[in-house]
Length: 364
Image (cartoon, rainbow, N blue to C red; front, side):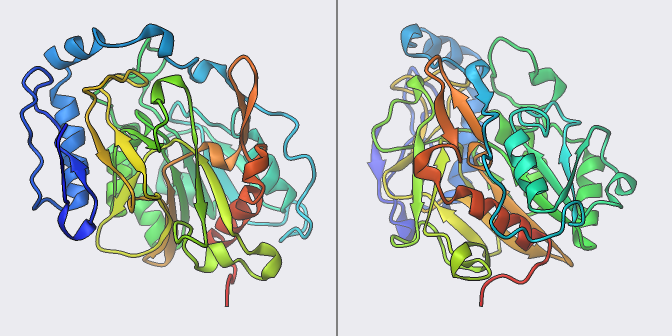
């Protein structure tokens, strides 16, 4: 792969081949970064045929990670409630966690620590198990969508491009209208295929997701999930109402995420997590199957978290789900989420996000 200077972004980006066999470059230095991401995803989709067969021959089966089936909820977390709950028990805003779209993370499953943490803060949490309409959202203040999938991408041997959207057009319209009228959405999409499954919904709010994997440094993506640390002091964790909190005890100085993906916001500000220098996006055709010819590009400066007003409502978008819960992975049951000692501020960050979505006054 050949690198080039990517103009005002100051990011060397890799040419992404149309054909794995010929290596014909297709990225031009005049492309905006978000256009490059969309083009990269499109190229990967176009390569599903012959290219996927060529790439499959280059895989190292022993290097394939243990997989999401070995990613389980850590029932020991949260170990204690928030020091100062925002609401009296059962008196806070109503939060609906979507479970109607074959979600990998649900209130009763891998997102149970997230649900318990919100309940301990006084939020009223329920599962949304039906097709989303304006009526189903009417009695809710906050909708959480975490790693939704279309039925065609459930119980398959491999997640493979193209990814089918999880939400119907009428559901997207209902959510957009509800947020514009005063609702609040927390949209979370992890690594491929989850970004592709929510791409139309994210795009309705101006977010262009990369349907790939965000990797930091020289980590080999074939061997598992790897943390990315965002810090206030280096600008990757951006100051604002959510990061600053309501007072000094809620101030966030570092956040840890676990692989995930990246996105670009079109025509609006609101960035919270900016991927650090040294982060790359890998865009495989089949999830967790990588080779030296897998399309890749530098991702530093792209977002993994953002929050902004939308009409009378609010939207928070994140490109990683593990940071919001507590899980263990692999045969050694390694902590992944806010049970990881390095993610000690993640629980407060979660509350800050939900407090902001609930319309509470945060920051100065």
